[in-house]
Image (cartoon, rainbow, N blue to C red):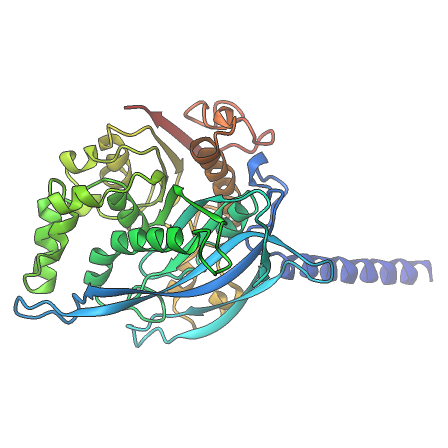
Length: 430
């Protein structure tokens, strides 16, 4: 009898444990803290709201439909998601549902599959302007991607007193993927347009929720992969003659990229002093000759690079690290995840990506083979908070950046004992 009672108790305990474990897993929201999360990954003091805006950049070059040397123009639509400090009513929760898709619109073997995931913000909440205006962060996804690819970071940074604007780059998202030529041309142009729009909409005379909320004069660009490619260019790293040639071959002779080339008068005139810093996750292009030594000299704003030492998309030694080494006029850092590949920036793989029968790429679009993506997310939150806190807010966070290069040698400041392993942080000054 006692044995049966013991076994029954053990079974009940096991069932409770499984229920509790399932509950904990299903209620984890992208960006939540793991027990070993470093210090600055915790959310800030602000509640946050989120809103979607539809913008239009009129009379832009339509490189996809320009032929035989004749330029075609179009009004380029851009959807942006904006996270901001907000006032949350006592009867409301900071929860929001985001719409995303698996698949790719230009790949018949990967049909679009809608799914939803949760975030910690309140849709259309009233803006909290008591301590504004707040510095502006513009976030640019990879190819392919979406404005929701880095919600663990966009929400986190908004809670620390930033206006965070993530762009859906037209013709470059999961849902509307088109020729790579559009991405090559438009990334930096989209960043600069959104910067101007946020300045306009944040003006005190504006009748939008952004009025008086945005300090566009204190802006940082955050880009992943092709987003990093565009952010570096928008901040001063002019493209090479080889990049312009490559673009021309792809487009049947278009010279449109010349305006983003190092030494071009139009490029020099476009450089915007409101951009104070850049965070570049796995920026693409160096292995393809997108930049040369002269172009990289043009990057003068403080820049924080994030890379995987086994990146097989952007490359490491001849890719991201070569950009870091060549940007000799910038105060720059490079955080390296040892043995990580390219996915050092996105949200963790959604549950839907492990559905049996789906192409492996739906999972590999998010996952890192040698790292826990949630762990990467927490570390990114920590270091981006430290870097932007120094550059845009003048906070005393340098101790989190002045570290031994190899994390295995000593516990890094802000990390719990035994947890700063498998990382490197380089720092070089002009």
